[in-house]
Amino acid sequence: MKKIIVLLGILFSFSLLVGCTEKTPEEEDRTFTLAELANYDGQSGRQAYVAVDGVVYDVTNASNWTNGSHNGVRLAGTDASSVILSSPHGKSVLTDLPVVGTLVNE
Image 1 (cartoon, rainbow, N blue to C red):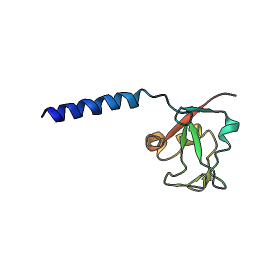
Image 2 (spheres, helix red, strand yellow):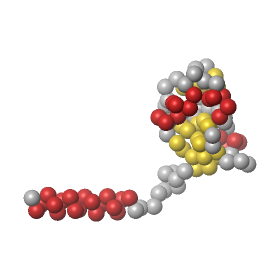
Image 3 (cartoon, one colour):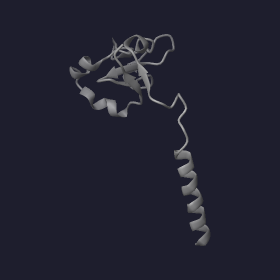
Image 4 (cartoon, rainbow, N blue to C red):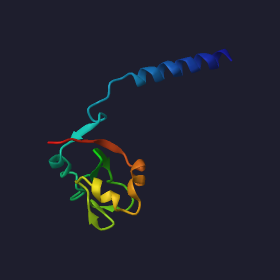
């Protein structure tokens, strides 16, 4: 029992150390202007990002997205805030997508 308590203490200490390390620039939230976001259009092997309400999502590997198009409509690399409101699924699908940053005014 004593060994288990010591082991748990070590694991807890390690988790505190790992949690306190600084994030690398790749792990920090990025900011995107509309011009920068346009580079993430899913074409020619590029990643596909889409912004909704100021949040930038990675849709590169999302189902229903192919080469930057969602169900045949090219949306990657754009601010799709108004378009998503008229979609059948609305914003509900956003919770499953990775967030990669925020959209800022130029």
